[in-house]
Amino acid sequence: MTSLLYNLKRYRTFYLMFIPATAALVLFRYIPMAGIVIAFKDFTFMDGIWGSAWVGWDNFQRFFHNPDFWRALGNTLIISLAKLVFGFPVPVVFAILLNEVRNKHYKKVVQTISYLPHFVSWIIAAGLVYTFLSPTSGFLNAIIRALGGKPVLFIADPKYFRGILVISSIWKETGWEAIIYMAALAGVSPEMYEAATVDGASRFQKMTRITLPSIAPVVSIMLILRMGKLLEEGFEQIIAMINNSVLSVGETIQYYVYQVGLNMANNYSYAAAIGLFNSIIALCLVLTSNYIAKQINEEGGVY
Image 1 (cartoon, one colour):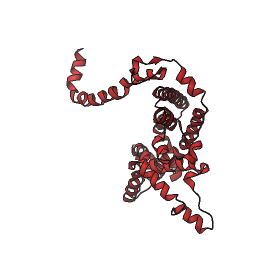
Image 2: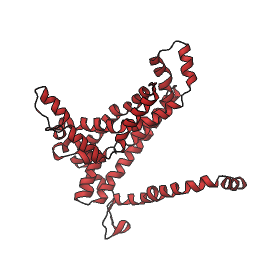
Image 3: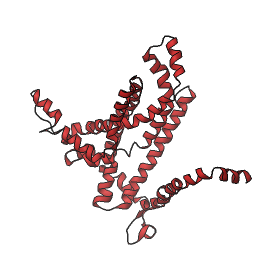
Image 4: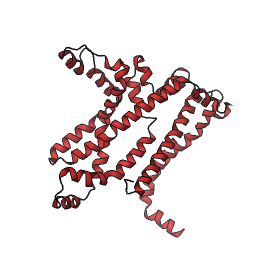
């Protein structure tokens, strides 16, 4: 007890700084969890959360038997996995390549330009994508016309829509995500590179034998966090770019919840049930990826 009081007194400034963050976490993250109960009720504003009728698993059975939900789930998995497979390695590669640049001024300029799109909202980013892909004035269609082809309405074509989502997401977030890996690279000891140089290692060998293993723990942590958001990525992007022509390939779970559970039917219990299902799946994905990372570590791997 004496040591506890001593530590509280000694580090009182840090504890005081910690209070607002803790209060915000409890107030906006933990207390609202009590509202999960509406997923098992037929919620109405008149009766309130606790006064609404209990319906048990009816809301879950409703979306499990709804083909539109499974279509939205399939679209979500395809889009999210495509972003994971094609988008996740890009910041890692970009950070490694940028770390190899010797001109510090050029390096800072490139890094600054690369993470600027992150600060642009998806509404503005979607407008830029629409302009770039416009069939009348878009740069890409201008090239197609110059080569003798006919303009393509990319943004309204189901064949291209998912690819547009993945590419635009990579363009917008690569520079920002690379900052984490650049910070990890800054912690790699220069002596390791000097020793490798003395041993006659090439720059490629240094990247594969020193750089990649050094940032591998950070990469594994980022991958675990990314897995937790596998079913929740890109709602702002989807709502800014989707249209009726590509609804069959672009409607994700979050957009489905927004449309059916909130926007049109105001069925909050149904939306809460789908949200709870998403959270459970996300938890399973995080635990699974964390377990795999630990198993790799036991074999001399990354985590």
